[in-house]
Length: 295
Image 1 (cartoon, rainbow, N blue to C red):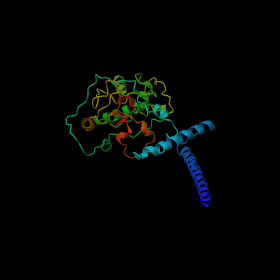
Image 2 (cartoon, rainbow, N blue to C red):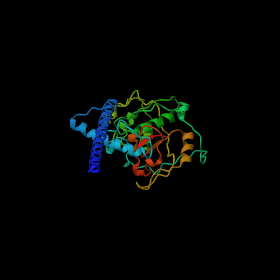
Image 3 (cartoon, rainbow, N blue to C red):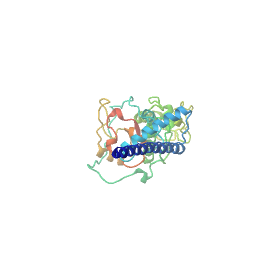
Image 4 (cartoon, rainbow, N blue to C red):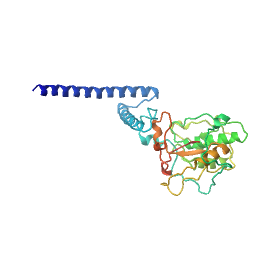
C-alpha cells in the first residue's frame, strides 16, 4: 500500500510539473509574440486575425527549432507570422517566364579551376546600397537594376542609382509585383535606351501595388545596355531539370564582367537570421527558383 501511495504521489507531481511546463512554454511564446509585434510594427485588424497569426507564429517557431538541429542559421524574423505560401508570393521570380535559349553564354578570358581567395566589387566602389523590395514581388527588378548600376559604373560612368520602379511599372513582359525575370528586364532596358534615376522615379510598389507606368517618363540618365549574356548555361529543358552550377566560370565572369543577376530557391530564407546556409537548405531544380538577387 505504501508503494502505491508513493507511486500515486509521484504521478501526481509529474502531472503537475508537466502542466506547469506547458503553461510556462505557452507564456513564453505569447510573450515573444508580443515582442515580435512591437519589433516589426505588426498590427492586426481583428482578434480573429491576431489568433490566426499567433498560430502561424507558433508553427514557424517550431519549424525553426527543427531546422536549427541541421543548420543553425534560423530564428524569428519579420516574416514569422506568414505562411509559407504568403512568404513565397512576394519573393518575385516567376517560373512561368522562360529563359531565352538563343542568348549566348558569356565566357571570361581566364577560367581557373578550383579558384580560391576573395574578391568583392564593393571594395572597388562599384556597388550601390542594398534596397528593400518590401511587400512586392519585385526582386527581379532590383536584381536587374543593381546589376545594371555596377555595369554602368564599370564602363567608366559615375555610380548611379537607377529606378527599379521603372521596371516594375513599365516592363510589359514581366508581372510587376507578381514576379518577373531579370532577363526580361535587361531586354526592356535595352529597348528603352536606358533608365531614369531612382530619385526621378522613386520606388512606390512596396505596398504590393506595382502602379502604372509614369507618363511622360522621367529623363533617361544612363544604364544603357548594348548586349547581355548568361553567366553559365541556363536551366532549360523543362522545369524539372536540375541546374548544374559552373562555379569556376561564374567566379571568372564575376571578376571580369562584374556582378550578375541570379535566381535561387529562397524558400527557407523566411527564418534566416545569419550565418552560412548549406546547400541542404535549397533545391537546384529550375521550378524551385523563386527569388532573384545579385551575385
